[in-house]
Image (cartoon, rainbow, N blue to C red; front, side, top):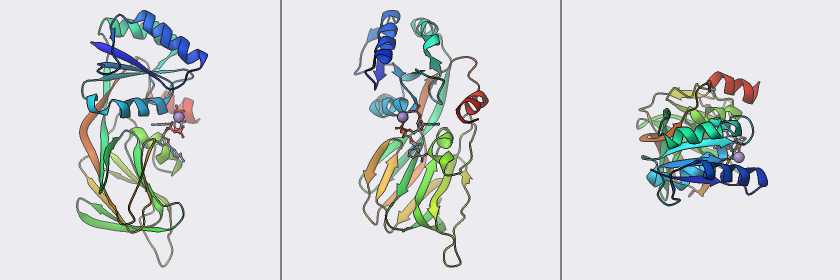
Length: 252
Ligand code: NAP
Ligand code: MN
């Protein structure tokens, strides 16, 4: 077993945490081919770490250490570091897994943990939404967001999408500033779909596709296919990290 530490910030606190972890972990340090990735930072740091190691994601266990209060992917705080390192050294930890969202466009493809969006911030796009290869609706507006349950507390929540218990698996489709009038009509409610649904978005005028923190340009007549992949990410769990507590701490 080999491990690495992934940290975005170079401030004193983050460097101190990295140093402490390195002094406690007894495994070989290997940035290229790790079995364990310990992140230091927030949920955004996890997104970047997963993206960096996407080709190795099947064998990696991620452990997120958050410098502030707990995040949604960061199960550990600085107070847990000694305990966490002991767990890793003795290979004695519980895990939770989450399916990644797979997306494919004409030119690009990838995986998202939170969500993908297709948007045009300057002009209305007309997007035909296909579910399981059948046309479902046409949405006119800024765009659409396709989220996992993990992503339900992120961008999806800002779009008034439902906050979904992260232990569930589903796909959430929300509209971004859609026009609803006598001329144009779409569902205009968040739509929660089961895991095996396959979505396809065909836009006449899409500009950007975002996949978590990443942004790609789209051709005006691009299509985007999206579904829950069999590919999973694995997170090391801490005991007593109740989902409802996180929701309360984060939002209430
Ligand atoms: P960012 O703009 O720095 O982060 C946005 C915020 O979302 C941060 O506070 C981040 O937590 C938090 N976050 C990330 N994943 C989360 C999750 N699954 N549940 C609850 N909160 C979550 O960008 P970033 O850190 O690179 O994160 C990218 C994410 O930002 C995207 O995947 C998208 O969900 C979100 N986003 C939201 C909006 C919006 O709400 N209007 C717009 C664009 C993007 P940390 O501070 O711990 O990193
Ligand atoms: Mn962030």
